[in-house]
Length: 531
Image 1 (spheres, rainbow, N blue to C red):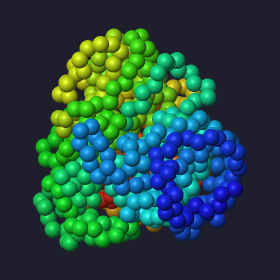
Image 2: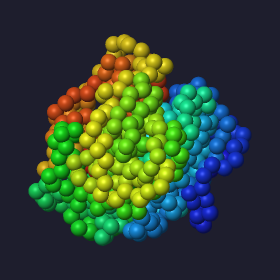
Image 3: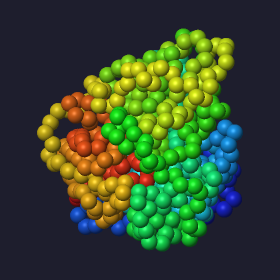
């Protein structure tokens, strides 16, 4: 049994950077209470992330065969397809090496930190043990430079997931990768599978960094002086107490050209489309000028697993010349529906099936409201590749959004009145960049209490003029009226969205906007299970 979980790894981690799955080995439960990097102190009356209740919930998942993965977070140069930038990534690739396991497995992943800042790993969408959720200052202490951390947990549910840091604005660098959990009793029939990761990119372009972007945004639309930038480059906001923000060493004042976006609008998003004018939009780490090409045969049935890993951009996605049959969203099956285009907010995932036609086709991701696109190519025959500027007509065709879907029968939440309703008013403005929940910026000591066994309703009341993709850690919720099971859902400006979930995974769990810059400015809070 391995017990050290934070240790010096100088020189050792580079050899395993970006490595995939290693041979399965046997293993049993670990004493997480003895682990280095243990959770922060929990207020009296609440379940601790490494408490007995969490261990009991993990045991009920029946942890199975162990899959070992080694991962290293490093500073590196990344080729975006003709443009090379310096960034942070898992190994030397973008996205990071896909991790693939089978539902029922135990994932044992060691993250070695070779970055100049502390970091962490959050497993977006997974219902896992709380002390492995990867939120510094809440469920674990930060992984310091030169240290490592062993994440080990049962993976109970199949689906399309991904992982990224929960430390400051690091997710808007190259630190993300797909996590695919295969179903041992897969009901879908298909010939091939294509994992598609969408992203908006600014890091390393003309001196820009996500920290510099956050500093600029934090001054607000009026450029108001919020004080001298703090050591994290946050434009005067004191982020030192925010659990999602790793402590940073002193850094220069923000650099790079202005990145604040003005005038980006979308009817689909209720008005203002986003805050950041990104220089590039990517599919699988490539610009549309040098896209990834996926090869198949005419007639092949292909499963597309689409992940929006962006920081500030919703994507409208279409495959030229094809209809898509939606089978899953956020890892959970839905009553199948056909569409020509999909809208994905940050953090959302969709699985679709397509039957490949003969030719060369653009898979285009329009940065909604920002008028730029990312692209990849499906090739099943001869012909010239489409140009980067192509806009397939399907982008303006039948569009499907999460609220139109129904959960498949086996995963539909049983009807019932909520035992508890938690109102989460989304507040703030672009003018002051004072995003918050219920008027309060994130404080890790703030708790919205629930008890195990309750049916809980979250009422997201958006009083702002921006849309927000709201994400709940450690659970999936149901959209209204038998709607899709989700962990991330778009809440439009001026609207209220009620979602229900069963409180069946004890611990301390984040609820936050998955716009990186809104979250880091304060639009986060904590759901806490009471003893």
